[in-house]
Image (cartoon, rainbow over all chains, first blue to last red; front, side, top):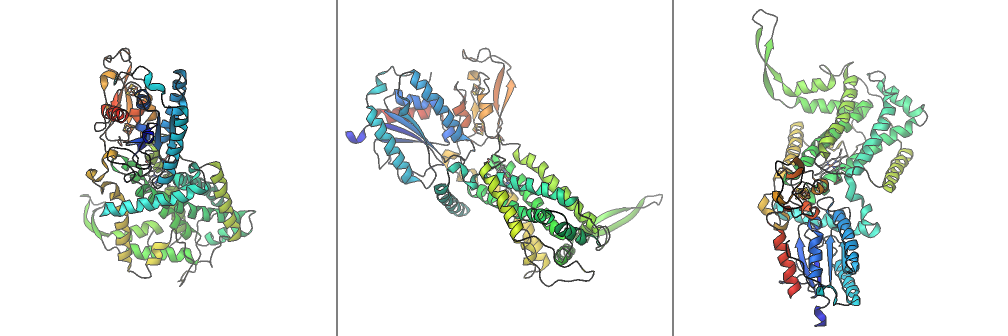
Length: 144
Length: 405
Ligand code: HEM
Ligand code: SF4
Ligand code: SF4
């Protein structure tokens, strides 16, 4: 049980850290089975609403991983999502959700180990916040 | 096969980044703004070039002397000449790194061909200007380079028919077969053989194509939103320092003046510009020309070599589409698309959602420019954009599935 908590959802850019071998069939990190990975074409593709959706639907934390700053395949995606996450954190604060439940990280193709270490640290931080939190709140309407 | 080879080079390129990023914060990684470094050197070249231009005398008798005068007599003249030379090397180094990095990291495919094709022109013009610069010093090396160039051009034994117009009442004087290679050589030397006009022509061929680089750069940037055209200040200072340092420690000097019948057997080789001339030692001129043309032709073909099916599916999600009824005309996607692929048009009718009811504008994606990155999807707060193959519903489904287990 404790192995699968806290529940973390990570949105990872396909071009950033190489995870082909590090992820199981059902989308969990081998090293950290409590972390679900959703691959996206570019970190800038993410709508912050999707990250919020994860929190509202019962994830204890969510993070976005883009390429190292300056090396976005699409030039600006990681900067843009970093700004959008920053705005989202302020929004979460107003909704009384701890903004540290979301994080933005940036790792390159060969940075697998550093990536896992960062995710582990993030998971530990979320664990310290307690896992109950936001799922009690009203579920969002799926696609409004 | 090509793809496997390219992927190996990609891994190697990104492996280099790992080491550099250990030394610097990633935003300082010089390989992340090689284009900006090229620009920096180009500006240094223009400024130092203007200075040299003030002293340069384009004639067979005085070209070499005027350069010597600049180097030896004019305060800082030698230093500035050295800066011009080493900045030219830095420029070529930067744009070659830029070329290979963009190639090995897939930044040129399909809709992204516009910077690549203009880049090939930039490369050709830069190489030409550089070689030309060595000729202009009009020392033994300059003369040898010009002679070799003329020899290579003349070896292109291609003849094309031209109509000859005469003053005869009928106006038509028949057809003349023009030797293309020799005609080109004559254009370079301004007249048959090296003569009084040659150095003026060389100066012209140095300054005009160098200025044309800026026109080409406009083309290079036209599809890029906020191109990073300048490196961070620390790197600017470092590069200026490095160029000045080299100019002071290894001054740029001329060889002996060109002799009317001189034929130097050896001269110092600048690997960044003069490599093709070195090849002439081992290959016939025709082979070198064919090789050069082949390399350039291949360069132009590179963006079209990979087929779309060969791209990883996530990176090939289809051109973004606007869900017109939802679009409010807020312009956020227009500001964030890194490839200027979205334009705003005046809206022919109101949108259907409440937020879109009073819109004045509507977003349009220009398919020919869209690189399928999806950044506009993240920008749109009104769910009015989708990537056809990775839809919002699919992502939400994945999120819900992950939350359930
Ligand atoms: C005069 C020389 C050149 C200069 C000053 C220059 C400068 C630049 C700059 C500032 C950018 C924008 C980078 C960004 O903001 O993402 C860029 C992009 C680009 N350049 Fe160049 N460049 C030069 C030559 C070349 C050459 C020779 C090539 C290759 C044939 C090339 C290929 C590209 C490509 C493909 C991009 C687009 C990168 C992307 O989409 O992220 N450039 N260049
Ligand atoms: S997916 Fe969107 S942001 Fe990316 S190039 Fe196409 S229109 Fe621009
Ligand atoms: S961000 Fe969305 S709503 Fe705003 S103009 Fe673009 S498509 Fe329309």
